Image (cartoon, rainbow, N blue to C red; front, side, top):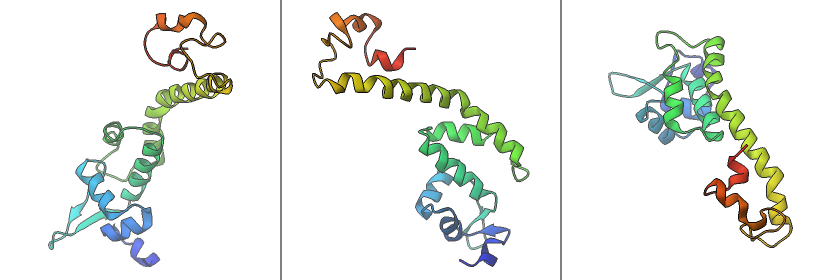
Length: 151
């Protein structure tokens, strides 16, 4: 694709795919899921506005963080439809992730800090381990990996 083509007001699905690094099939999927929108030409070809590139980047980054598509769609719905989103608009919706990301970070830190203790000794008997869970006392807190899901 030439730079001139991307400087146009709208991009074809192929141009957006090339510029974003996302396959055309994924872009069509994102559109079906309500994450991005396109207009249609008289020949029924998709055309994407230039700000769609930023939306695609936001979707891809959010997916890498493990955020479900439904949640991404809900947050993208907070962006203005009548104009190109500003830096302030993007900053505002990015705040929607902060609490969830902080929780994920704490969970990953607990996993990092506690996983080596259990796997390090080699016994792999988490329910009977005299070092990590003597007498299976964590069972009284409920099912699942209690050390990871409790503060």
